[in-house]
Length: 212
Image (tube, one colour):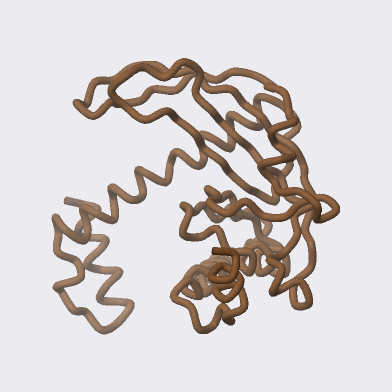
């Protein structure tokens, strides 16, 4: 298993489908022109070390849901191992839906720490180590009928208080609204089927959708 992961890490990012995340980061940062005010939010597919480094180089920020348990500190342990030592820093209540669509309130424990994160073993000669914030929100006493909430986020932004932790969770939660909007455009409005070839025409079409 380690060998397979090591081979994937050795493969250049340019040869992977995940390179699109880096392209989107660079293009959106360039278009907006205010990198220091941007926070790029992504799901677990965007948990790419190259993206962390690209954001740092561009002077912009990111807040991502992580799926990789990377090496941390002096390299003898992982992020999860270090986070296991962090005590609960506060509680937060969130609304959730079960599989039947019923809404209830869940209580999550907040843990956060600034951690020295190392690049993958096969890429340590190409990328620097980074100081990043790890934020975990884990549900207390999950009821039957749904999966427990367990958000593991990584960001370059500081989190030093419960208020800042809650703020980052609220930012990340906005991602689902964006995904719903994209689904409406793609499946409901059939935006892709329009096959428009210029940015101007596409902008006009999207503007019409938004008015409707």
